[in-house]
Image (cartoon, rainbow, N blue to C red):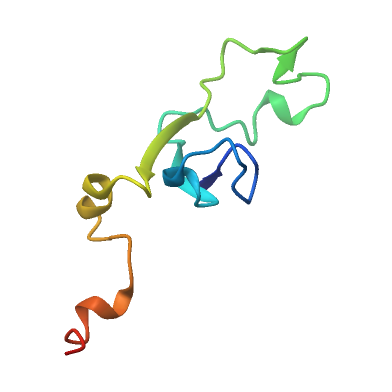
Length: 96
């Protein structure tokens, strides 16, 4: 899982809206299910690089970057049985 950060890295900046005040807004995944496994292949030999001049060898299928969940989207959080807010609201009754 890859936690993505906001544009300022770890803290809000003046140009971001109130919904952007969290340092980490989204988690993404790397899908390797269809990617080429290059260990114990010709690519173990330094004479056979996986990329030449920035172009990936055509026999290699790369891993895919997959958006997973946006922490500011309540619908996406609900699919994972998560929410934004205090944990204790589900455990303790409200103060009266």
